[in-house]
Image (cartoon, rainbow over all chains, first blue to last red; front, side, top):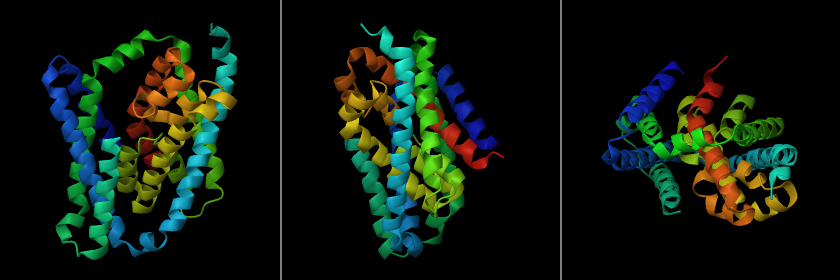
Length: 92
Length: 201
């Protein structure tokens, strides 16, 4: 937990200090994308070699779908209250 | 869109290789991918810090706009809490972390698989992809029955990029700035919130 916060904050700070070096944003973005591909590839390897996950992929998929339904339903209901209470009347 | 396709493809390629080919020990080494993850965190941080656009948007807006990402957070956590009663393979804490991906499936699934294991990691990947797809497909329905903030909250972190065009189309340009703001805030929060939920207490 502490490691994550330290690494992220030092990254944000470094980025903030380098914000006028416009050339860095492109290589950093490419690097981030590449690392994401690599880590998801490695996650894929772990998953593929794990018989427990592979044989339960249908069940895992349904649980993912249920969580999505929960997350989306909760979000639209709470934002509906926010919309009615704080935003709707300010529309032209 | 092309980017998300490659993300899913690299995951699927990994699965196929893991299924059929024996993997040398060093590639399965957790130590190695931990270092890659730390590198990723650092560079994601640089991206956030150097992005003048997000600082400007955050400075410019009125206070009540904060209620939009807040609604997405409260709604999401409440929603997945209810669902977690009905599923067995994912704990309550993991459900909260998966919800806190807010559609940012690449980063959240990596973090969750590293901290909590590959089963919740895979669920996070699938669930957050579904969240993006659901928002893309159902934005007009959400607007119609739950108001103009609904697709923004449903889109979560994706409302600043992948789902922004659909959201703008069905809510109007004045809500585009709200969508970008909410998506930016949630994108920055994802790595912190996911780690916090999985490791605190």
